Image (tube, one colour):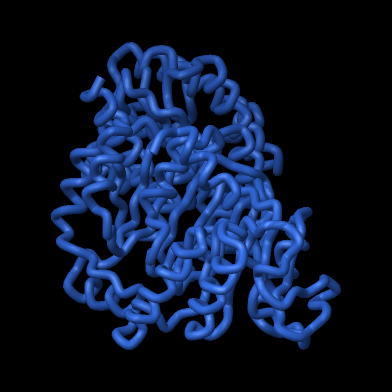
Length: 485
């Protein structure tokens, strides 16, 4: 499908003008009632049509007996009733008003993920297709689209961002939104697809590729029923946009879990490893790695002409630096000593005893608090000017500053790093690691730092290992694009 057609087909899903809700109760406690409340609180301004066989209104909204009775066509229908009722419901609206519903998302379970529901799922798909609508699910949770002001999640950022997600798991989709919010990720959309009975992940990925708002694509997937199409689409894209895949069911036990979760036959893990190598998509192992990698691609622009390899570590904590050096090396990243010119220039600063200037650059708090944090700018300026790293990871153990420095020292350190970054645009990727011990006041300050940094395009991580995995993913992407040019 060409770019124009895929945008035309799926834009109403991401920006629906009308939403129908099936399954809401007059008592207000059902899941669809919560969905109505959430999208209203989220700022949805389009028409909301509760569907109920007898009630004149639901939650203050005029209710309609069937989907076919709504005054305007339905862009998106949210359906959470007993599964056995749904095929006839879709068939009826299709018979009376073909094409009246564009997308129907079935939240209900009991379909293809269990043996006794496979026939029912086939009936569901046939009814949707006969009615001219596309089917999402079944066995999922909903959609989250800040640009359309529709959300199934209780909490989520309202800003329209650049991270587009497809999740075969509804619960994991919720985790991605909530954890993404905490880490500073802003989404262009997140669609849960459950059993993928009709709309496939590949179609949504194709939409994200065509969508100017989306900068990076993330996917949690347990199976690809149209695996050949996925491979060909990703290969044809040539990693123009980074794709991050969290794959469920990569072990024998995981295969069994996936089969019972969404009815998926997940396939051989070697196939997914080969897919990553041949298409440039990044395969990660954990939800944290997934979030960390998406954050990096949201914040930093890959440099295919100069793939990331040499990394400088700068901050307080010698032991943390040594461990990070080992860890980065295992990931294929080099934390190697500076050349003589850089070391001589750093030595000329006559920094206090205990400061290491070879890379990693380890500075005790006593060093970093000089000039109320301004000394960092001098150090970093030398590193950028002659050391010329591909990436610089600044790490601060925030606990070490408490009670020993003025509150503004931490702010000054970060501000100094950002000034140097601006002085040498495009030279090095800059990542910030803010380590803390969980003390509530410190965590609150860390959250404030994170918000400021992410707003300036700086990804912030909790530990060096998080930053390392994200950088390794960036390196993989850059190297793939470089070799294909």
